[in-house]
Image (cartoon, rainbow, N blue to C red; front, side, top):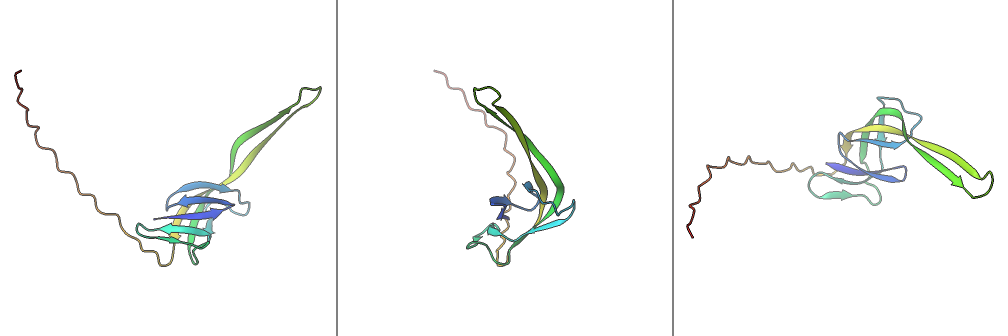
Length: 133
């Protein structure tokens, strides 16, 4: 079962157990729960439920793993070929790392994948008679 949620202008395809980094939330602490209610699409193995624009009553619940996580440092340099025209700045984006716990979608049929049968062990290979030419 998976769902597509929207957060911060971006869309994420999530399933239970996924860990992802979203935009920084300063009001949360480690271990708290976050609920996403903008669920755009959900699939339980059968037919998908598509929202127009969102699925009403659908929620995705996540737990905060790391409240504040720093991304990579971005280096910005500006140079013009005149005297004293160099400028150097940098930026480091903050993120919040979450783990998806539960996906709840009303009227979604969950279909279990078909059971995989074990492949029988191969019999002894039959020797091929060599032909003389």
